[in-house]
Image 1 (cartoon, helix red, strand yellow):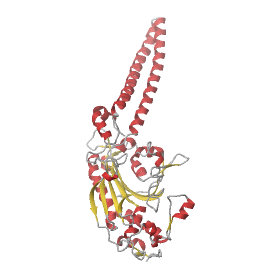
Image 2 (cartoon, rainbow, N blue to C red; image 1 turned 135 degrees about the vertical axis):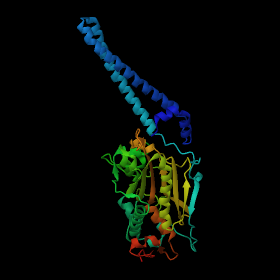
Image 3 (cartoon, rainbow, N blue to C red; image 1 turned 45 degrees about the vertical axis):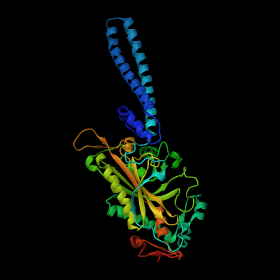
Image 4 (cartoon, rainbow, N blue to C red; image 1 turned 180 degrees about the vertical axis):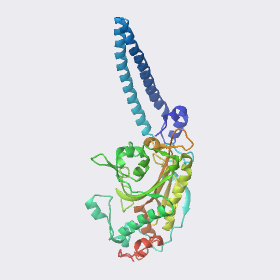
Length: 430
């Protein structure tokens, strides 16, 4: 959410920032509404002062027997009461309208976000590992003999419909091992705080992190009014919703492994084969709540945390700085990490690490109290996948595939699999 005072003081800069998002001049309409709202508030205050003055004079007129003045003042008090109620109601309505407009506008991007229309204009900033040369044509994950019995889309469709999967046997264990490995690494090596959170949240929490009001169709809402989280970013970030914490409490670095749910409303026809784009999936999510002066440093740190997971899994990847046409609604800057998938012969996103500045904090009213004194300030928030577990499963299977249909597994996962190092072409850990 945007600071209306900033828009008042720098309307041209605000319009320029929104223009980078493809939105034309907005400040004039916003400021006109803001001015009308403030005028109503001022008029209500003036009416209240007039009413207070008249109320004091009513008794004096009665005391000196001036019935005409007494009646005039009493009528004036009644008129001002009605006027105050009307002005306050109008100001409240305009305030709500202004808040709705500001809540629906995207974050202001950092200057170093490259200009561009879509993912083709993203800028690569890092690359690690070399894709393996195969003596055969590599298959996509769902085509591998090793997973044919352990990745069941037909049964999942019977149970729930399209874009679901039933995992079993070696594939299910590998999926679980990946999540455990990610959590352990983030906790033991990256010093994140392991957290377990609900996957059902109240509407205010979705508003706080920016999934609402604009993107409700991308998520699922229950008949009881709860929302299923599209990512643990929602529950983890909102831990500080409505709080003022001590500066010494910062930074807070959370990590959680949760189920996630997305309707994929805007992706009809995309990635319908296999596990790449599902309605229900698992993610290990990282969230940081930081001092404003530390958020840039924290963004780089979180990006390295996610990259380190891929390096330990021996999976080639590249990191890109998202361009203005591809960046998310609430982000000031986003680094996407894309893992190499030999079955598709391309890099695909496996993590997005975003710094949001005070955008979410303003929506949540999350602040910290400076140790040096002074007024509370808004915290900065960041979020990122560390990693998407299902996509990591896809990458491990595709990059480890062998010509005979078996899969060689990364060494770092062997302890999580009871020392097993492969999945045979028959789907057995060995």
